[in-house]
Amino acid sequence: MTRQAVMEASAPSDSQLRKTLHAMNLRGTKARVVILRAVFRRGSPVSQAEIASALGEFWVDLSTICRALNDMINVGLLRRVEVGDLVWRYELATDRRTISEHPHFYCHECGRVTCLFDFEETLLALRDELVNVGTVHSLVLRGICDECGRS
Ligand SMILES: [Zn+2]
Ligand SMILES: [Zn+2]
Image (cartoon, rainbow, N blue to C red; front, side, top):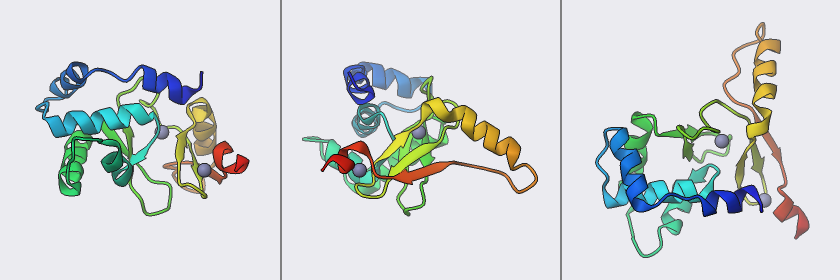
């Protein structure tokens, strides 16, 4: 099973998502729940447009999505990921695996961003190496993902 399939299989129920929101002192509105579910399902950083198209029958306008995302960022539930293509993407900031900073892989064909959880050490090592150059905030590797490479 791929990591993506594992994440989808373990997507929490709506009541679990509401509990997660309550734990962060946010009301469990329907919009927040469905947006949070879309972020969980993806298991990698997801853009506002991708969230909007993943909502299915529960339609939420972009300004509501934007507000809900900001609310969840402000309480530390989500984190913004920037890979240099001027698109904000969002990932969980509380997941055991995403709690620390990690590098990301950006496919310049399809725009998909993948978390590189196994390369946290690489980021930390680079940070130490570059201490006399500057402060490293993020590490983004660019290339073509397997899916785009095959087609
Ligand atoms: Zn791709
Ligand atoms: Zn990530």
